Image (cartoon, rainbow, N blue to C red):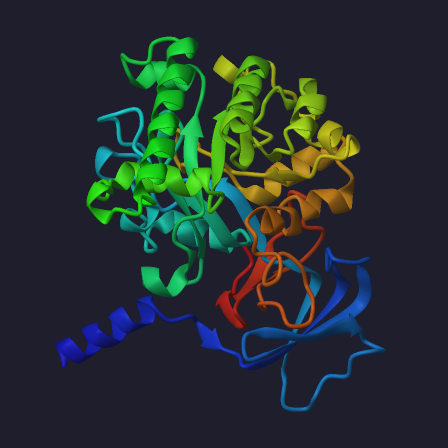
Length: 403
């Protein structure tokens, strides 16, 4: 009997709270993000997908649909950059798996080998509306490893993984010098990265030799760097000062890789250079601390960059203190308070990061045919006293109480 009970308990760990194959959500306001907000709206959900969305006058609810009511509905939130699932809530060495310090350049480190879908922080961000998470190896090494994209729904890692290798996590700046004796200067950092990228170019060239006996043995480091050079993955470069942003854009131009500038504390000073490099931007958590490489950050950055025509994704990033992660809704709300237009604020944590991750055809907005990832609130999402009351992922309610 004990074994049966234990088996049932374990099963519940990996299955959502309730399966709702056919659901209708009625709301006073629906932010589709792909279009204008809908007042007095309805979202129909069937078999994990959005079946229809529109005003109550346009969309009739079939009799056999379960009805949920909410004040406001948004798409499931997309966290553009996090280390949740690697950095754990206990803040002790055994649950901190985000940074390997045995070497400054380790692109071969796979995110899927370290991500813990049962980490409490995954449930924490899910309860606060995050349904899609771009997470992976952290800041502080020239190349710390790979990133991945997951859904935050309960389940084993293969069931929740959307993209096992999305970007290469890289860092330029003082955090690297704080973790390694070499490189000890900015010039050495750039020299070391360039050296490895040149080796990767040579490796790729030799791999195409017609004489197979001359092809080098598989090297995991250069296989990963090779994917960057061939455009299969992007460089996620954490850079904050204007000088480091220039170094990143210069490197991307030299080796012709796709660049995502992460952190970007002084991006407001580098608008022309970022546009010229065709770089994408993930802006640091708005409530990050002014210090170190981020001493010149401003909470007006999101508004400034948006006004300049640069799409901005807002991240939770890395928090050194318990509970180890920011709340994405709060970060976007503060960006709006400091000048980012309201609907752009919602977009910065939904459709813009979905596009950056190449997942905009399935997540990031409320449109027919997309994944039924939805967040339901009892008020304005950017009001501090508003609660996330239900979270739906793939048509299943996975959070069912106001947080």
